[in-house]
Length: 320
Ligand code: NAP
Image 1: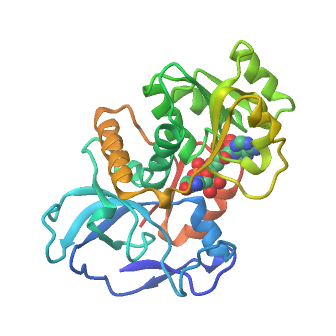
Image 2: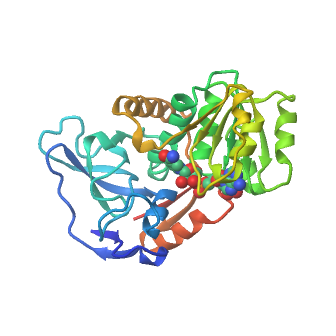
């Protein structure tokens, strides 16, 4: 099979296409023939060598994908060959034509959802659900700001929050991104590149503080987020690429919470709840992953470059 291998950490050019033997599933594992692969920011951090957890070299990146069960290992009764699935984790890496996964990393993909859309579910939708419902404890009728709503996690959060009955505000850096955020269900959208846009956010909520912020760029926004919160408001830190100074008093006066999250920390029972909710939304059409751009496997370096460029408008996928 064709796969991407990384033999040294570095810039996107270290993502090389190689021919390698198709792996076989062991006990409790399945082999998935991938028809689409999800590209996530964490894979660029790992590839660069600047991430806390580094895989042993050489490795095949990726955890998200969608395709068809090609073979099942001994003891697997929950899946049959030919079933459509998406992956949320793999044993062998998803940037390849085939990936071996443990059965707990594979979920059924409803028939109306394309493989490219299925590849956009694993990390982005699970993170958005965990941030909104489990860490953020969002309630219908509350107001949420999705700070960075135009990317993979943000669009998922907009759709989930709107279906959950919240007043949804989003931000994006381009006209295209803002239009997408509105189309996917936000009540109002703001430009996080404009000076003083936070004043417009408060005005849009009639001067009342926000109940919840889902934050994709805490290194830029956390101090401002705290000042936007209402009583018992919560900020869920999803993304942060550096340090920031905050005024702790902004939490005291509001009884406010800053709650971090890393999806990999999710206990198995809560992860099962997340994917049950996602399956229901995908099957009913309330969740509709939006694909920004598709790249062939050989252009994986460009996919990494494009993902880190400003101007997100949905999810970047690779078609092997
Ligand atoms: P993505 O598709 O690349 O989207 C990035 C988003 O950040 C876009 O909406 C972008 O908007 C927005 N953004 C850029 N500058 C911003 C600013 N100053 N203020 C607010 N938003 C800004 O990435 P993603 O997959 O959605 O992931 C988003 C972040 O969450 C990344 O940092 C990622 O590493 C992190 N993440 C964490 C976890 C976890 O377990 N904690 C899981 C998944 C992702 P424009 O492009 O429109 O400017």
